[in-house]
Length: 321
Image (tube, one colour):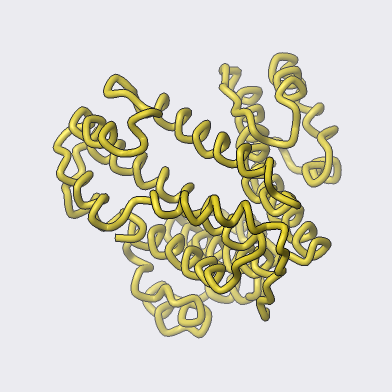
Protein backbone atom coordinates (compact mmCIF):
# COMPACT_ATOMS: atom_id res chain seq x y z
CA UNK A 1 0.00 0.00 0.00
CA UNK A 2 1.41 3.47 -0.83
CA UNK A 3 2.64 5.52 2.10
CA UNK A 4 1.89 9.23 2.19
CA UNK A 5 3.09 11.57 4.91
CA UNK A 6 0.60 13.51 6.98
CA UNK A 7 2.44 16.82 7.13
CA UNK A 8 1.39 19.08 10.02
CA UNK A 9 3.44 22.11 11.05
CA UNK A 10 1.99 21.86 14.55
CA UNK A 11 4.24 18.82 15.10
CA UNK A 12 7.37 21.00 14.86
CA UNK A 13 7.97 21.22 18.62
CA UNK A 14 7.37 17.51 19.20
CA UNK A 15 9.58 16.46 16.31
CA UNK A 16 12.35 18.75 17.57
CA UNK A 17 12.23 16.99 20.94
CA UNK A 18 12.18 13.61 19.24
CA UNK A 19 15.29 14.41 17.19
CA UNK A 20 17.12 15.22 20.44
CA UNK A 21 15.89 12.04 22.16
CA UNK A 22 16.79 9.91 19.13
CA UNK A 23 20.40 11.05 19.39
CA UNK A 24 20.55 9.28 22.76
CA UNK A 25 19.47 5.87 21.46
CA UNK A 26 22.16 3.20 21.73
CA UNK A 27 24.53 2.76 18.79
CA UNK A 28 26.12 -0.55 17.71
CA UNK A 29 29.21 0.51 19.71
CA UNK A 30 27.04 0.89 22.83
CA UNK A 31 25.65 -2.61 22.40
CA UNK A 32 29.13 -4.06 21.91
CA UNK A 33 30.19 -2.45 25.18
CA UNK A 34 27.21 -3.93 27.03
CA UNK A 35 28.06 -7.33 25.56
CA UNK A 36 31.39 -7.25 27.40
CA UNK A 37 29.42 -7.93 30.60
CA UNK A 38 30.07 -11.38 32.05
CA UNK A 39 27.31 -11.23 34.67
CA UNK A 40 24.09 -9.32 35.29
CA UNK A 41 25.97 -7.22 37.88
CA UNK A 42 28.50 -6.26 35.22
CA UNK A 43 25.62 -5.28 32.94
CA UNK A 44 24.04 -3.13 35.63
CA UNK A 45 27.31 -1.31 36.24
CA UNK A 46 27.67 -0.60 32.52
CA UNK A 47 24.07 0.59 32.20
CA UNK A 48 24.50 2.95 35.15
CA UNK A 49 27.13 4.77 33.07
CA UNK A 50 24.53 5.43 30.34
CA UNK A 51 21.40 7.65 30.37
CA UNK A 52 19.67 4.68 32.03
CA UNK A 53 21.73 5.30 35.17
CA UNK A 54 19.02 7.51 36.59
CA UNK A 55 16.41 4.80 36.02
CA UNK A 56 17.95 1.57 37.25
CA UNK A 57 20.30 0.45 40.03
CA UNK A 58 22.82 -2.36 40.32
CA UNK A 59 20.47 -4.13 42.76
CA UNK A 60 17.67 -4.54 40.22
CA UNK A 61 16.34 -7.92 39.14
CA UNK A 62 14.68 -8.71 35.81
CA UNK A 63 11.13 -7.85 36.94
CA UNK A 64 12.23 -4.53 38.44
CA UNK A 65 14.13 -3.56 35.32
CA UNK A 66 11.19 -4.47 33.10
CA UNK A 67 8.84 -2.39 35.22
CA UNK A 68 11.20 0.60 35.24
CA UNK A 69 11.73 0.46 31.48
CA UNK A 70 7.98 0.44 30.85
CA UNK A 71 7.59 3.38 33.23
CA UNK A 72 10.45 5.18 31.46
CA UNK A 73 8.84 4.74 28.04
CA UNK A 74 5.50 5.96 29.35
CA UNK A 75 7.01 8.97 31.11
CA UNK A 76 8.64 10.09 27.85
CA UNK A 77 5.40 9.50 26.01
CA UNK A 78 3.41 11.51 28.56
CA UNK A 79 5.84 14.42 28.24
CA UNK A 80 5.62 14.40 24.44
CA UNK A 81 1.84 14.26 24.50
CA UNK A 82 1.82 17.70 26.12
CA UNK A 83 3.08 19.23 22.87
CA UNK A 84 1.43 16.89 20.35
CA UNK A 85 -1.40 18.36 18.27
CA UNK A 86 -2.87 14.85 18.02
CA UNK A 87 -1.97 11.66 19.83
CA UNK A 88 -4.20 8.86 18.54
CA UNK A 89 -1.26 7.24 16.71
CA UNK A 90 0.25 6.55 20.15
CA UNK A 91 -2.63 4.15 20.76
CA UNK A 92 -0.28 1.64 19.12
CA UNK A 93 1.49 1.62 22.50
CA UNK A 94 -1.53 2.41 24.72
CA UNK A 95 -3.55 -0.44 23.25
CA UNK A 96 -0.57 -2.71 23.75
CA UNK A 97 -0.57 -1.93 27.49
CA UNK A 98 -4.31 -2.60 27.64
CA UNK A 99 -3.79 -5.89 25.78
CA UNK A 100 -1.08 -6.96 28.21
CA UNK A 101 -3.19 -6.00 31.22
CA UNK A 102 -6.29 -7.82 29.97
CA UNK A 103 -4.21 -10.94 29.27
CA UNK A 104 -2.75 -10.73 32.78
CA UNK A 105 -6.22 -10.43 34.31
CA UNK A 106 -7.36 -13.41 32.22
CA UNK A 107 -4.34 -15.44 33.33
CA UNK A 108 -4.84 -14.43 36.96
CA UNK A 109 -8.47 -15.55 36.95
CA UNK A 110 -7.75 -18.86 35.18
CA UNK A 111 -4.68 -19.71 37.29
CA UNK A 112 -6.05 -18.20 40.53
CA UNK A 113 -2.77 -16.29 40.92
CA UNK A 114 -2.18 -12.64 41.70
CA UNK A 115 -0.93 -10.55 38.78
CA UNK A 116 0.51 -7.04 38.51
CA UNK A 117 -0.93 -4.53 36.04
CA UNK A 118 0.75 -1.62 34.25
CA UNK A 119 -0.45 1.95 34.09
CA UNK A 120 -0.46 3.81 30.79
CA UNK A 121 -3.27 2.11 28.90
CA UNK A 122 -6.63 3.60 27.95
CA UNK A 123 -8.68 1.35 30.25
CA UNK A 124 -8.67 2.73 33.83
CA UNK A 125 -6.73 0.38 36.10
CA UNK A 126 -9.47 0.42 38.73
CA UNK A 127 -11.79 -1.31 36.26
CA UNK A 128 -9.29 -4.06 35.53
CA UNK A 129 -8.42 -4.39 39.23
CA UNK A 130 -12.11 -4.83 40.02
CA UNK A 131 -12.43 -7.61 37.44
CA UNK A 132 -9.24 -9.24 38.68
CA UNK A 133 -10.34 -9.19 42.31
CA UNK A 134 -13.86 -10.41 41.57
CA UNK A 135 -12.47 -13.29 39.49
CA UNK A 136 -15.58 -13.00 37.32
CA UNK A 137 -14.25 -13.78 33.86
CA UNK A 138 -17.52 -12.79 32.19
CA UNK A 139 -16.88 -9.17 33.16
CA UNK A 140 -14.10 -9.09 30.55
CA UNK A 141 -16.83 -9.20 27.92
CA UNK A 142 -18.02 -5.77 29.08
CA UNK A 143 -14.78 -3.98 28.16
CA UNK A 144 -15.01 -1.15 25.60
CA UNK A 145 -13.99 -1.16 21.92
CA UNK A 146 -11.91 -2.82 20.53
CA UNK A 147 -11.96 -5.42 23.31
CA UNK A 148 -15.71 -5.87 22.99
CA UNK A 149 -14.86 -8.59 20.48
CA UNK A 150 -15.14 -10.97 23.44
CA UNK A 151 -18.92 -10.46 23.52
CA UNK A 152 -19.20 -12.42 20.28
CA UNK A 153 -16.83 -15.25 21.25
CA UNK A 154 -18.19 -18.67 22.14
CA UNK A 155 -14.74 -20.21 22.65
CA UNK A 156 -13.48 -21.26 26.07
CA UNK A 157 -11.62 -18.46 27.91
CA UNK A 158 -8.32 -20.28 27.45
CA UNK A 159 -8.52 -19.33 23.76
CA UNK A 160 -9.41 -15.67 24.28
CA UNK A 161 -5.82 -14.45 23.90
CA UNK A 162 -5.97 -14.87 20.13
CA UNK A 163 -9.19 -12.85 19.87
CA UNK A 164 -7.77 -10.10 22.07
CA UNK A 165 -4.73 -9.83 19.82
CA UNK A 166 -6.96 -9.73 16.76
CA UNK A 167 -8.94 -6.92 18.42
CA UNK A 168 -5.67 -5.07 19.04
CA UNK A 169 -4.75 -5.12 15.36
CA UNK A 170 -8.28 -4.37 14.12
CA UNK A 171 -8.70 -1.44 16.49
CA UNK A 172 -5.45 0.11 15.33
CA UNK A 173 -6.15 -0.44 11.64
CA UNK A 174 -9.58 1.18 12.02
CA UNK A 175 -7.99 4.10 13.88
CA UNK A 176 -5.30 4.49 11.19
CA UNK A 177 -7.87 4.68 8.41
CA UNK A 178 -10.09 7.17 10.23
CA UNK A 179 -7.16 9.47 11.02
CA UNK A 180 -5.23 9.06 7.78
CA UNK A 181 -2.20 7.43 9.42
CA UNK A 182 -0.84 5.88 6.23
CA UNK A 183 2.53 4.85 7.68
CA UNK A 184 0.96 3.29 10.77
CA UNK A 185 -1.50 1.32 8.63
CA UNK A 186 1.31 -0.01 6.42
CA UNK A 187 3.35 -0.81 9.51
CA UNK A 188 0.47 -2.79 11.04
CA UNK A 189 -0.14 -4.71 7.82
CA UNK A 190 3.54 -5.66 7.70
CA UNK A 191 3.49 -6.65 11.36
CA UNK A 192 0.43 -8.85 10.82
CA UNK A 193 2.07 -10.54 7.82
CA UNK A 194 5.15 -11.36 9.90
CA UNK A 195 3.15 -12.47 12.93
CA UNK A 196 1.20 -14.84 10.70
CA UNK A 197 4.46 -16.29 9.41
CA UNK A 198 5.52 -16.98 12.99
CA UNK A 199 2.17 -18.62 13.71
CA UNK A 200 2.51 -20.83 10.63
CA UNK A 201 6.03 -21.79 11.66
CA UNK A 202 4.89 -22.71 15.18
CA UNK A 203 2.01 -24.78 13.84
CA UNK A 204 4.38 -26.59 11.48
CA UNK A 205 7.20 -27.25 13.96
CA UNK A 206 5.26 -27.81 17.20
CA UNK A 207 2.54 -29.89 15.55
CA UNK A 208 -0.38 -27.88 16.93
CA UNK A 209 -3.93 -29.29 16.49
CA UNK A 210 -5.72 -28.47 13.24
CA UNK A 211 -8.03 -25.98 14.99
CA UNK A 212 -5.06 -23.63 15.38
CA UNK A 213 -5.06 -23.15 11.62
CA UNK A 214 -7.88 -20.66 12.14
CA UNK A 215 -5.75 -18.56 14.49
CA UNK A 216 -4.19 -16.27 11.89
CA UNK A 217 -4.69 -12.50 12.06
CA UNK A 218 -6.65 -10.65 9.41
CA UNK A 219 -5.57 -7.24 8.15
CA UNK A 220 -2.27 -8.09 6.48
CA UNK A 221 -1.33 -7.83 2.81
CA UNK A 222 -1.10 -11.62 2.45
CA UNK A 223 -4.29 -13.67 2.50
CA UNK A 224 -4.74 -16.10 5.40
CA UNK A 225 -5.45 -18.89 2.94
CA UNK A 226 -1.89 -18.50 1.63
CA UNK A 227 -0.49 -19.27 5.08
CA UNK A 228 -2.79 -22.28 5.39
CA UNK A 229 -1.57 -23.43 1.98
CA UNK A 230 1.98 -23.06 3.26
CA UNK A 231 1.19 -25.55 6.04
CA UNK A 232 0.55 -28.23 3.42
CA UNK A 233 4.12 -27.88 2.14
CA UNK A 234 7.23 -29.46 3.64
CA UNK A 235 9.20 -27.08 5.83
CA UNK A 236 12.23 -27.54 3.58
CA UNK A 237 10.29 -26.15 0.61
CA UNK A 238 9.17 -23.00 2.46
CA UNK A 239 12.33 -21.17 1.47
CA UNK A 240 11.33 -21.50 -2.17
CA UNK A 241 7.78 -20.29 -1.62
CA UNK A 242 6.65 -16.94 -2.99
CA UNK A 243 5.16 -16.00 0.39
CA UNK A 244 8.40 -16.39 2.37
CA UNK A 245 10.36 -14.78 -0.45
CA UNK A 246 8.00 -11.81 -0.38
CA UNK A 247 8.55 -11.38 3.37
CA UNK A 248 12.33 -11.73 2.91
CA UNK A 249 12.60 -14.25 5.75
CA UNK A 250 13.78 -17.40 4.01
CA UNK A 251 17.27 -17.27 5.52
CA UNK A 252 15.97 -17.24 9.10
CA UNK A 253 13.24 -19.91 9.28
CA UNK A 254 15.41 -22.39 11.20
CA UNK A 255 16.95 -19.78 13.52
CA UNK A 256 14.26 -18.62 15.99
CA UNK A 257 16.30 -15.93 17.77
CA UNK A 258 17.56 -14.44 14.51
CA UNK A 259 14.07 -14.66 12.97
CA UNK A 260 12.62 -12.58 15.82
CA UNK A 261 15.46 -10.11 15.41
CA UNK A 262 15.05 -9.87 11.64
CA UNK A 263 11.28 -9.36 11.93
CA UNK A 264 11.69 -6.40 14.26
CA UNK A 265 14.50 -4.95 12.17
CA UNK A 266 12.21 -5.20 9.15
CA UNK A 267 9.62 -3.13 11.01
CA UNK A 268 12.27 -0.60 12.04
CA UNK A 269 13.30 -0.27 8.39
CA UNK A 270 9.69 0.42 7.38
CA UNK A 271 9.33 3.16 9.99
CA UNK A 272 12.72 4.67 9.09
CA UNK A 273 11.19 6.39 6.08
CA UNK A 274 9.80 8.85 8.63
CA UNK A 275 13.10 10.72 8.26
CA UNK A 276 11.69 12.13 5.01
CA UNK A 277 9.12 14.21 6.86
CA UNK A 278 9.93 17.10 9.17
CA UNK A 279 6.44 17.82 10.44
CA UNK A 280 4.19 14.92 11.32
CA UNK A 281 3.47 12.04 13.66
CA UNK A 282 5.76 9.65 11.79
CA UNK A 283 9.10 10.53 13.50
CA UNK A 284 7.40 10.27 16.90
CA UNK A 285 6.03 6.82 16.11
CA UNK A 286 9.43 5.75 14.78
CA UNK A 287 11.25 6.94 17.91
CA UNK A 288 8.99 5.20 20.42
CA UNK A 289 9.10 1.93 18.49
CA UNK A 290 12.90 2.04 18.40
CA UNK A 291 12.93 2.94 22.10
CA UNK A 292 10.75 -0.07 22.80
CA UNK A 293 13.20 -2.26 20.86
CA UNK A 294 16.11 -0.78 22.84
CA UNK A 295 14.39 -1.82 26.05
CA UNK A 296 13.79 -5.28 24.63
CA UNK A 297 17.51 -5.58 23.83
CA UNK A 298 18.45 -4.66 27.40
CA UNK A 299 16.09 -7.27 28.82
CA UNK A 300 17.35 -9.86 26.33
CA UNK A 301 20.96 -9.34 27.42
CA UNK A 302 19.99 -9.44 31.09
CA UNK A 303 18.01 -12.68 30.81
CA UNK A 304 20.68 -14.19 28.54
CA UNK A 305 23.36 -13.54 31.14
CA UNK A 306 21.13 -15.02 33.84
CA UNK A 307 20.83 -18.23 31.82
CA UNK A 308 24.47 -18.28 30.80
CA UNK A 309 23.95 -17.91 27.05
CA UNK A 310 27.19 -17.63 25.07
CA UNK A 311 28.25 -14.21 23.86
CA UNK A 312 27.67 -15.08 20.20
CA UNK A 313 24.06 -16.07 20.94
CA UNK A 314 23.52 -12.78 22.73
CA UNK A 315 25.09 -10.81 19.89
CA UNK A 316 22.96 -12.61 17.30
CA UNK A 317 19.78 -11.56 19.12
CA UNK A 318 20.49 -7.84 19.49
CA UNK A 319 18.31 -5.79 17.16
CA UNK A 320 20.31 -3.22 15.20
CA UNK A 321 23.66 -4.94 15.63
